[in-house]
Amino acid sequence: MAETYVYRGGMYRDPKALQAWLASRPPEEVLEPDLPIVDVHHHLWDTPQRGRYLLDEFLSDSLAGHKIVKTMFMECEAMYRTTGPVEMRPVGEVEFVRGVAAMSASGNYGPTQITTTMVAYADLKLGARVRPVLEAEIAAGGGIVRGVRNCMPWDKHAEIEKYASGQVPPGRLLDPTFREGIAQLAGLGLSFDVWLYFTQLPELVAMARAFPYTTIVLNHCGGPICVGPYAGHRAEYMAIWAKYIAELATCPNVYIKLGGLGMLHFGFDFHLRDVPPSSAELAEAWKPYMQTCIEAFGVERAMFESNVPPDKQSCSYLTLWNALKRVAAGASADEKAALFSGTATKAYRLP
Image (cartoon, rainbow, N blue to C red):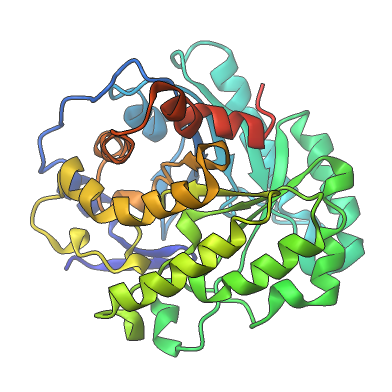
C-alpha cells in the first residue's frame, strides 16, 4: 500500500499518489445523468497533511457528469481562526464557506450551487456556554448555517485509533454538560450531526429520546466499522449494527446519511487494489448496509452523501455516485427523488 497520511476521519494515500491511482480506471458512463442530486455532505480543505481540496478540485469532481444541483459543506476543521478565544476559532470556517458560497453564486463556476448551506462545528462540551459561539456562527454565515456537527468516535480497542485519530472519551453523549450544549440547538433552529461507531448507537438512541425536538442526522450509515478486532466478523457485527439501526429509526427526529463507506474504517479492501473498483463492485459491497438503513428509516429520513474527499480513498466522485445509483436501482422515481435530493432538502431546510 502507498504511504498513508492519518487525519481525524481516517487514513489517506499521499494526495498525488491517490489522484494517480483514481485515474488508473477509465471513467465510467454516467448513469441516470438527469437525476438531480443534492450532495449533502462534502468537505473543502487545504493542509500539508490532507492536501488541497478547495473549490477548483471539487468542481473537477462535481462537473464530471452527474447532475449535482447544490451542495452542503460539512465541518472539517478548515480555515479556523488562529487568534482569539479558542472556542470562537471555528467561526473562521463559517466565514470561509460563506466566501465559497458567494463565489459559486456569481455564476462564474458553473451551474452547481456549491456550499449554499453548511453544518458548522462548535464545542458542545462547553454546555450552555456554547450559545455565544453558535450565535456568532449564525451571524457569520448570513443564513447558510443549518446545524452543528461533533465527531465523537470511541472504541475500547486501542488499534482502532490508527483508523481515526482523535477519539473522544467514552460516554460523551450521556454527559450532562454535553447535553446542555445539545439543548441550545433547537431554539436556534440548528440540527445536530454526529459521526460515531456502531457500538455507540445505544447512547445516541438515549440522547435522541431525551431531545425529541432536536433534529439529529447520523453520518456514514451509523459507523459499522470492520477493522482491527472487528475484521473477519462482518456478518456477526453487521447483525448487531442492524439491530441498533432499527432501534434508532424508532426516533422520528433522527435522519441517516447513506455514505462514508469508502473510508478505511469499514474494512473493505478497495484501497489496496492496483486499480480502483467499478461502481458495480462498490454497490455490491455497500448495498447491504444502505438497504438496511433505507428499510429502517424509509426514504423520507435517509439521504445519499458523497463524503468527498475522504471516500475518494476507494473511488472517484463519478464512480461513487454511479454506485449509489446502482444501490437505488430498484426504487421508484419518487423514492429516488427523496434519497438523492428531497430528504436532504427537508432535513436541512435547504433553499
